[in-house]
Image (cartoon, rainbow, N blue to C red; front, side, top):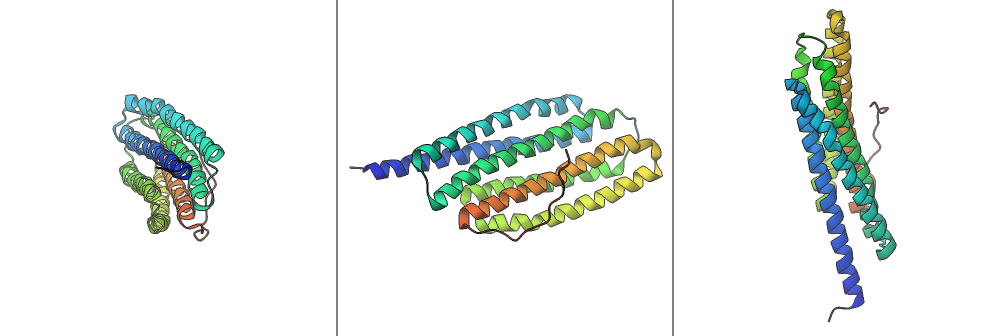
Length: 232
């Protein structure tokens, strides 16, 4: 016959499983938003860009559900030590994933502005999807690390952020050079610079999640890293 303690442990495990499932669902929607926003940018697909903007509400709704569940778990289960770290990490990670969805939405918002500026072809646009894929892969992998409580994978994702930053720096220089050489494209390039910055920030947030995953799994912290001022 199961004891009250066993019932409590089972209920807590079910709650943690539900938190992980919700965050995984959020992550899937965020990855889809990044992919679709970049597809809309590459194709000038205004309808798809609008769809990305509308779907962001679904990510917001799941974040609210995670908040409610996390608060309930803390109030009813009174988790301690590593269990408490995991619940708190889930709460924080949900907020970060929601922000990642916002960056994808911000990219989608720029599509009409970029493609409404004229027919000028900017070669750096072809580099942005590859950069976005790097960032999206980081989001995917860090959420897998959270589900598996994999501290080593989380630490590896932090290292990958440097490569994404280098990619951003390269695209930034390319776009600025193009803008200087083709002044009529200043407005269009300015929007593309914001797109590149939003992608770079997605990578930063994936790294933030990795730090939370590492802490939840080990109770320790990763080495400090430099962060940029946030740009919307």
